[in-house]
Image (tube, rainbow, N blue to C red):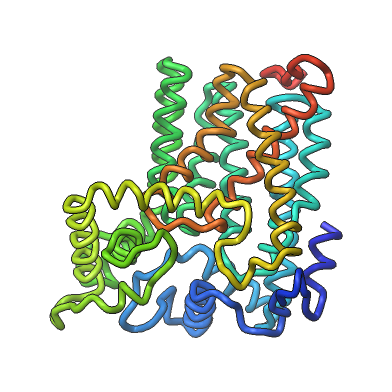
Length: 396
């Protein structure tokens, strides 16, 4: 945590000639501005809205987190960054625990060391974005899921569902991933107790989302919206005549809408336009999928303003080393179902998801701790000359 706090406490930081915003400066990203506006509305008693015309535009989890930090410590962004440093430390601890449970103590130490100094993790604690909070909730849910897989009990499955539900309230894109994990778990352990525990997990997720869905129905005059009114906009951003695989919200704003449409109906219109474009141009849609995949897993930042040589080396070299180690770890793990379910499946899910939606290196960040765990296994297993021995179900 010391590395992270030191980074966040700096008045400003220059990496390879690129200045990272200081805690007193406004954030660089439009998403950040939306969440800060939402936090302000929450503190003012207006609820988690972006504006009067965008009441369902963002999931509420990160905005409530920002509002809580600002209520406790004041409006300065330094407080947000320091709290996110604490959250990132928790993520490192959970990743190390997962490595210990799945592989052994030596791997856990490697994960703790690598994750604590991994440049991208440190960088994102200083950004007002969902990644740091989401990563902690995701890994916490996976830790509970591992317990549930080994014990076949409802209690850890329910805790996993609660954390996955909270993660979905931070980032809506994870909702289909919860179902993927539940189905894969049942396929891995096809037993009645597994089916019952998986049902408990999904019920816990649903219970976590019910208040948000009910609020959306009231705020939208009767529409049933499980996540946000931006799914169609996000899809059209990725599938339109001008799409290049990256963010381009300006194209979304150029689409004309009949004045009588509300925000939910406008979103449905954008979704229909995106689906129609993909159907009419299947070859380009497939090509864009490859471009988006490459953007998500790019070695260097996609934005030109962050492509200085020193920054590319500082972020790219550690990433390449982790990915090479993770590939070795996957090979050495063989056909171990627990490893595939807990460490590999979330990575594959987000890799495929962002062949549909826009690609960016920020979207891989929450699953990078899982790849660090696999990389640690690859390095340690090679050092031993044989796969490391995981902990048993009873922890002995």
